Image 1 (cartoon, rainbow, N blue to C red):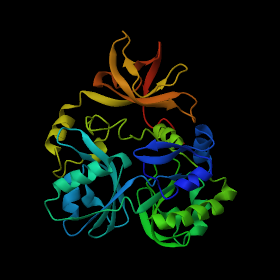
Image 2: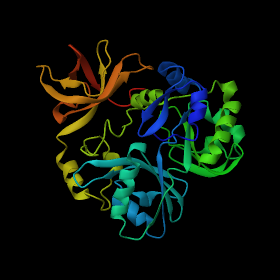
Image 3: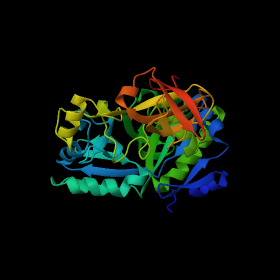
Image 4: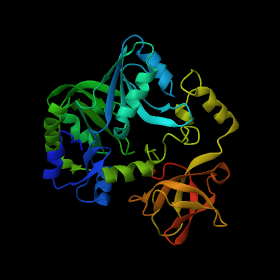
Length: 360
């Protein structure tokens, strides 16, 4: 089990630690609902240093990235980031990721913790253009400072204008007394804020200063459980739940990051799928009665026939009702349609809704 550079800090704060993607991670501190509300209303800090970071460099860096990613990375200028996915050869997804253009020929790829080795091997297998690859995952830490008060609470720690960093943009600047950190705005919570990428040796200083500066704003540490409820309220996909090696970006509703203006792995098959329409789709639903939908629960039609399964589900702290995502045949995917969720021995009706669940 790997630790982040802040594991002892979390333990000292009384966090409940759990194994996650091969790491010892804080799942909660004071409780999921309280932590969720902190991020929605004030400011909270996640240690997400388990994420992977790859540096792709050289004059052929973009060529390699274009080949393995579904989005069009040629649109990135320095200081911009892009959400994308890496399709496999079978219309599934190797991983979803964020691509940062750091310099003209330097890109940072941020990948999911559980897929670091798999992603590295996949990209390396496609690198016949001589791009230089470096795996920085073990050397770098990542903090996500999220919530509507994040900018105001943290502005005194940097000479950069935090309010000027637009969504999916970033700067390389000073923060909490450390030079050359990446400050980005690619949040996974839907409540604003930003992320800090720094070296492992620097993260404790940053963490301490962040909490010292943020105390007047009600800042709190937030665990992975609240991260999950926050992202689900926004309808953001989680790899391993809502997307994986068997789900296509088209059926997952990720057509917007799948650009057929270029060739990439399996692009012909995905283009054909988009043109004819996918046989199944990832839908969002809200329960019409009390209950909590969980991953793996069956989705039924009105005749009690199983038509799909829940990929992510929870009791939404913001909405006070059960919400979830799941795959169903396309005929059942229209907003307003009624489906049913098998929750233990009870069948609970649900309505297909438009994302996001939480409107802010």
